[in-house]
Length: 123
Image (cartoon, rainbow, N blue to C red; front, side, top):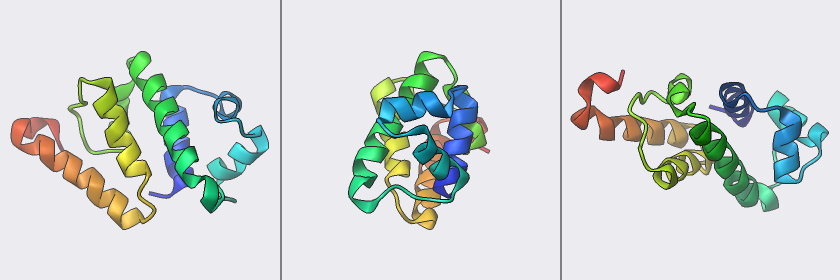
């Protein structure tokens, strides 16, 4: 999954506006718009901070508003962790992966963790 797809899905699921997201990250709305449309990526020297802030922003938005279960459109896991910190960590771990194949593998690994415990919870 490329960054623009992931951002579009997370913004859609969370119901947050790009301008609010930009303000929290201390970016201009036009800069965030470039990331969301896929015309630009964050500068390499800012990627770690971007990932940390984005992961926390979306974890808070989705968890606090009870929308975490909607992440099944992105990740093939229906059983969402109950601890907010663990949930944020799992999301950040997938986000921090630069290689799309590795990110998909991490998502599959996450699904595999739940497959044993809850076989019907994972497609």
